[in-house]
Length: 129
Image 1 (tube, helix red, strand yellow):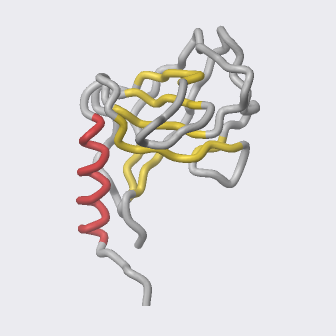
Image 2 (cartoon, rainbow, N blue to C red):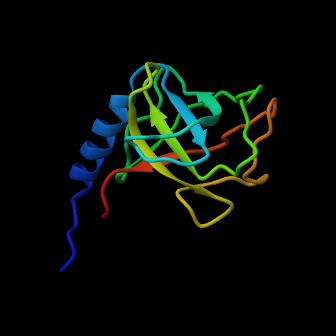
């Protein structure tokens, strides 16, 4: 039997994790790395003062995310992303690809210096159903 969670538990866990991001967090797209050693950021997008709305059915949806209109860029493709506090403390780290990943980038994975990088939608789920 696999572990399952009630909707109440899923909502509580998701809300607890997204609350750690705090006011004015960041979504950073990175070339490589882990949560402990995240690597250089190719793009740095500002999250809303309240990054995520309250979880429903175990999933929280991000509020508006500002575009990075002057990305740092890098010759290597983006492979990971992190959600972190405004002070740089990482709380969520995930994979990025063109499709079938945690975050999917639709206009290619290479971010050049000065590019605009936008995120049109983002959700987070802490626990499986």
